[in-house]
Image (cartoon, rainbow, N blue to C red; front, side, top):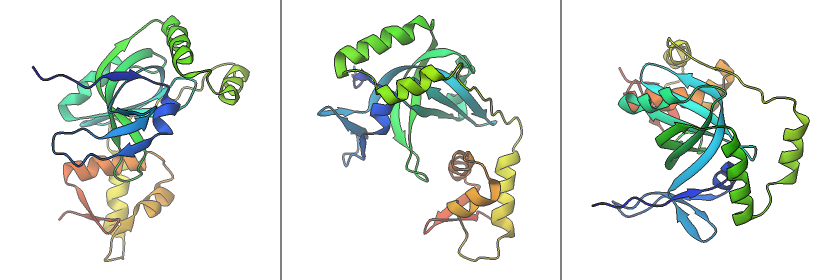
Length: 215
């Protein structure tokens, strides 16, 4: 039987502030370095504050009062995201990945389960007992907010994708279009997710940090 790596219980801020390491071994997972551990899988409890989905891709943004991170799934694996709706408190176990375009870390989920919001407090107590008190500045900010801002970004069509494809197609540059140009012209921070999706589907390709249509 193949054993899985331990899914460590962490704050999202611990994930985001850790160094991401790409393993050289063929069968060794990539990981973050945290507390002298190589962490490739995590177990977090957080609130779903946004959701983005297309036919072949789904992404949710999670907030645990320490920071925020995205969880992303593609193709048949996106079914797991159906269990996560905006405003839900969920337990998520998954592998840490890095966006090849923006270098931001995200989680590829293996298990998602809705839980009672009391588990947020239980997990908070567990993590503070293990690692110390949560950043006071972040807590104070959260306490001053009457409610968490929740935004649903749900694309049933391909508006952002089509916008990106049109920008690249209409570009006069033979070198292609950079991610900075795409960000400026679309005005959407979700452009990185959409570009990553288009790359995986073979709609576009990257050359020297710029994107071209695959014709």
